[in-house]
Amino acid sequence: SDLFGLMIGTGASGTSVLGNSIGLNAAGTAAQKNGTGIALEGPNNTIGGTGAGAGNVISGNTGDGLDIFASGAMVQGNDIGTDITGTKGIGNGVGIKIIGANNTVGGVASGGTPLSGPNAAMNLISGNSGDGVLLDGTGNAVQGNWIGLAISGSKGIGNGGSGVEVASGNNTIGGARAA
Image (cartoon, rainbow, N blue to C red; front, top):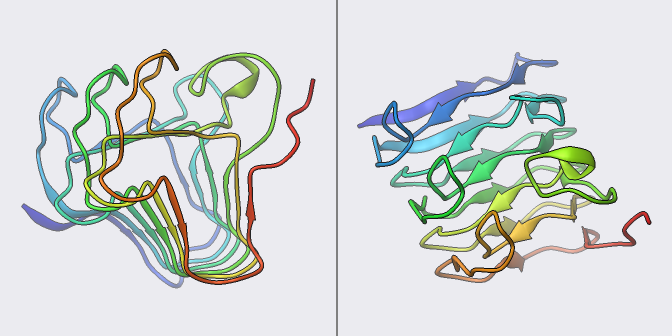
């Protein structure tokens, strides 16, 4: 196992990580472990996206799936802690840990499922052995995600800790969904 599946250093800004499988075998059905899936230290980077094939599958890592130590990150359309189908848990430690400020996980939109259609901004964060999301920074927004569910939305794939644990102030969890 490697220390990181992907490390985006402090000097990297404006980087997009799209359409990858990190921490799983080529079929996306079993762990191929790293320590941490993605460690993000540079500001204003994008993990996933709302376009077809833009989301990443970040699962099966012994440490956290995604660590964000920076500001201005956009995390959308990813499957964090499940197999490639979104139906079976292959968890990380914590799904997403945010130490930085002013980052966005998900988004609010109408219709669709987390990884398709108008709600493609949503992340599926399920099956992790620790928290789904751990916030220890300020000014972050965690909105419109499916946490602790399978891709169908009708079956639970719980995280071992809290769905979202908030360890610091001035963050936004949830919000109005567009009609």
